[in-house]
Amino acid sequence: MIRDRIVVGIHDESTRRKLLQVRDLSLAKAVDICKASEAAGRQLKEMSATDHVQALHSSKRSGARGRGRDCDKSKNYPPVFCGYELTRDGALL
Image (cartoon, rainbow, N blue to C red; front, side, top):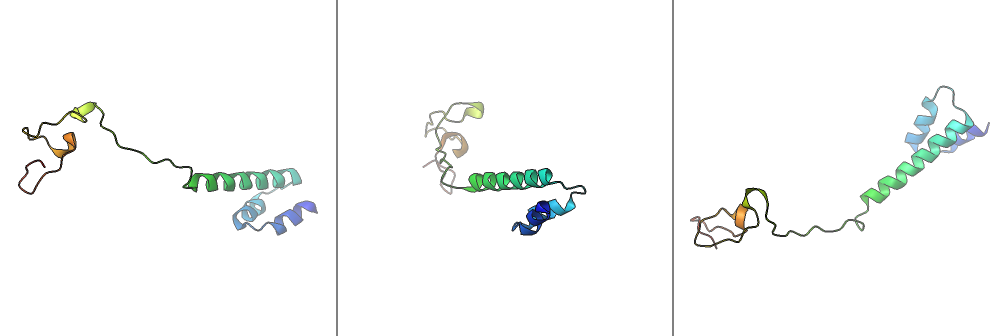
């Protein structure tokens, strides 16, 4: 009786559908499914919150393919490697 009232009273349609799909639904199973659905909803809300995301800052670092090395404007490094922009004629700014 209580189990049926839980199924009918659930506002979340996807949770109600899960409850209706279980063949031998007991009160304990219904409570477990509802708790799991609530926990998943809270976790999704936390993951989508933008105030917890920290901004990434770019930094020059030495590593593979010469990234982050000091650029000499007299050499014609591609901008990917030294961070300078190219003019239309291909010269470094």
